[in-house]
Amino acid sequence: MTYVPTIPDWFLTRKAAQVTAFFALQAGGAINILKATKLLYLADRLSMERRDFPITNDTYVSMKFGPVNSYTYSYMNGVAPSRQDDWHEFISPRHHDNLPLSQQVEVGDLDELSRGDLKVLEDTWEKFKDIDRFELAEWTHYFCPEWKDPAGSSIPIELARIFQVLDKKDPIDLAEDLQNERRMVSTFRAA
Image 1 (cartoon, rainbow, N blue to C red):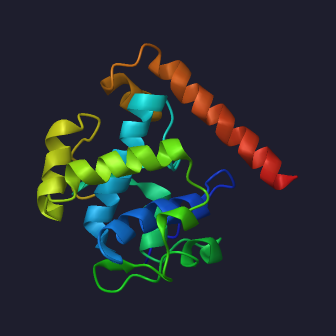
Image 2 (cartoon, one colour):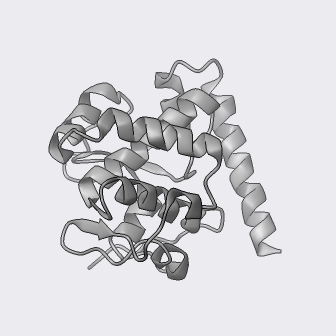
């Protein structure tokens, strides 16, 4: 039986698809799913370090091969039950272990991403583009202390924990700010 998550209203599927598309574009039109999951997480983490908020505003879990953006991963695997059109506008269904672009795009077409988002994505790509997907997964085990070995399952990674390992002054306050923003987005989308 396949786990089918409930995607919350505050999750911005189209933005997550565009982040994935950015990395697929940099990789030549398709990207390995394992490498994509690591790059997305590392970009969100870098954004939290620099700007106190992630790009995708996903939830995060520890899995066997490192930290993962949970809802985005559901879209990558084709099991997200809602807003598939937002995802497929940029990313085609998974083909073996690859995530191909669904159309010819340029970075300028990624209209959900701010200049600040793009800078973080570019810096993430430059740092990790030449690292093999398995080496990158292993790297996250050592350099992302918020990751814990889930022993074959998955374990939630709390936002406050990520802020804490990034040496932020008020990790709980920052996490609460993000939770409040999520509630506001949900309220807005429900109206």
